[in-house]
Image (cartoon, rainbow, N blue to C red; front, side, top):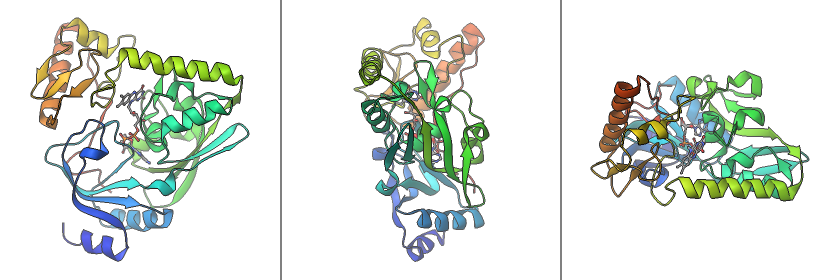
Length: 304
Ligand SMILES: Cc1cc2nc3c(=O)[nH]c(=O)nc-3n(C[C@H](O)[C@H](O)[C@H](O)COP(=O)(O)OP(=O)(O)OC[C@H]3O[C@@H](n4cnc5c(N)ncnc54)[C@H](O)[C@@H]3O)c2cc1C
């Protein structure tokens, strides 16, 4: 697409052309981004975003890439990553303000050490604070919506806004941020003071449970499908005997039916074939539709 490179240069934005996204997604899928930009200040982001919106440039913001499917053919337009400058975590009494690029795991462990309760569920959820808020990440009966006070976003007109929890329309692994394509800059969590030893113990138990039940040594995106509650996608897939089923180098995990693991240079085509296979078999056998939790980077990005 002509003009993007020149504009990025003019705005002095840190970018790579035809960048492999392999190291930016936990599935280790290898598609390229036409332009991968690293943003270092809110001002940079604001001018880039205004340019994207004014010119309808396809774009996609990624956090730590722990819940995205990168297509083999790559993505057109601009993939945006927020840099270290967006990683701050500030604790003030029982409120915590975290930058969108901060590690969600680090956030959860830091507040546990301060005797603040509410984020024990998240200590094993990889990804960034921005990704966790957007996805309403959760586990062990809780999720972000239960502890988020407010979030600072860049809206679809390029303006910064602070939205209260009630304005984010949280539901299971969903928020209005996904639909509106807003960019999370910062999140404030409201936690409760509690007994530090109890918080640390629960946090550690949650992490150990993950180690026992999830294939954490292999590349994955975590759960591929949302759970069609009261059923669990992993159980349905396991009951069909699909654990261990392999297409190319992508495999339905032998350890957890809702994980697809990359055994080494799997293509997104193989991963998508496994996703379709699981969906078809579950539909056929149980008349239940499995909906992906993982977010697909489309070849057109998200339209500005
Ligand atoms: C081993 C493993 C275990 C997991 N376990 C869990 C679990 O227990 N519970 C759970 O909920 N998830 C789980 N996940 C999925 C994933 O960790 C979460 O969804 C996480 O919150 C995604 O964060 P991220 O920064 O990696 O986002 P990405 O994967 O980079 O992006 C995911 C979505 O968030 C959007 N996004 C990211 N950053 C921003 C931003 N700053 N502003 C706006 N939108 C943004 C992206 O556009 C995309 O739509 C697991 C993943 C793995 C690999």
